[in-house]
Length: 413
Image (cartoon, rainbow, N blue to C red; front, side, top):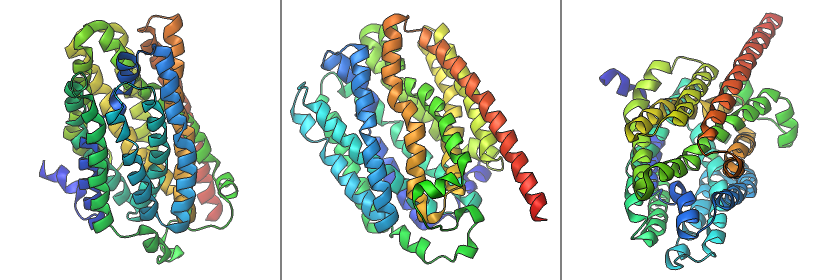
């Protein structure tokens, strides 16, 4: 046990501050896990229409991502993070006082716009503070921090949902503001660290480049193809927040929201307990190996939901795909950071988030349409085959990129 926890020793002090902020922020992550049920149970929308609104909210993050990334690369990661996170938190306050008014949807869309600007700045901040194998440990620790809080948050929200709905919005806003104050006080502007680093100290693919994002990106086509494959990972994973609550609602009736909240908290609990062990066991693996294994576990975990009706089996399925989630979440950003020049780091993160996030954005709409024509259970068989196909493509991508890497090293020598 001591050996595994030593994995996180020796990181930049700011990483530990961000870790604490992640715990605070995720403890109050009440709104998004219950967005589908809010739109269907409280506002009375069908699954298809709810899927449309969730998709619109997800798409709304796109302009925020691109603008936030450009500003983060130009003016500073921390500055843009603080401004965007503050505005996002403010968007959650009016819905607490609007009951079941349809106007709430517009505030949630604006919330996603500002959250879109937060993500590339945050990821670039962490990448600036770390290098090499240390980066994988840092992303693993922060992912663990998010889930420490998330193990509690959805369970609380599940019991607040029916009787104290306004507290879901106010709690989410308050914890976001507390977390950003901590970062404002204790974390420096990381863009300054990057600008004071000699290019020769950085790996070749991370060295600063001039020119537009498109010019630099075209030199790295592997990032584009990798991001496109991640579309399908997100497409399947998104069903954990869209189709899964509907499935549990269909099976367990009025107990569905509470059981789903328990399942979501169990997902986070598995992350809390097993992230250290999974990271310790796989930290030496190349990111693509871990991401391929993650896809295999997604196929098994989500695919088995087609066959089950008992609550303990939902927990078993969640355990399987959560181990895959740990592997995917702790390796994807490492792979992107290793292929992104520091001068375009936030924008590279945005391109990845945009392409891979398309799967998450369109998943609710596609799932809603699918449910209109097929039984809800069939979505889990579709998820299984999507992941099988994606894993095969990722294995081929890994073989080709490694072969090109070996040929490049031969030519240099």
